[in-house]
Image 1 (cartoon, rainbow, N blue to C red):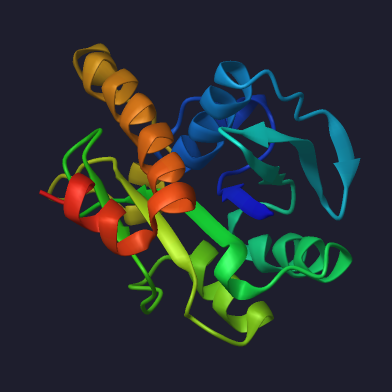
Image 2 (image 1 turned 180 degrees about the vertical axis):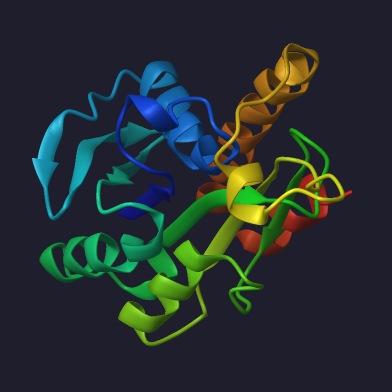
Length: 186
């Protein structure tokens, strides 16, 4: 079984913001594989299903980004999941919009959601799909940038990124993270 977590912030004020690309990928997976992410549990919204032969729990933490680890810890404990079964999708300002970078583990790199996960899980050894949202323009505050919405010109790249992120997650589950990194990091 895999726990697939998309990081973001709850509420309509944050829909379609850069910080919520993790939620967008979970929504794309849910739509593609007919999984309802509609159960409020463990400080998040979860959905159970099967993706290409793999049992999955799709998770959207409702704790706000900086406390995401609380939800993920509860989900991991409840399902007695091993850290190797966790895949996290989140925004990355160092990548162009829609571009992906897969990692087997790593530091938080300044991302507060990932800092929270590392603190609550006690390890940084979990698989991640970093989803590019573009670097903040000169003079912008980082928080303002990640909480802003994408311009219309980025929509095609974001749609393609969502599709690729879903493919990458399936690849990680079926072929392993190394294969995923070889196919999707470029």
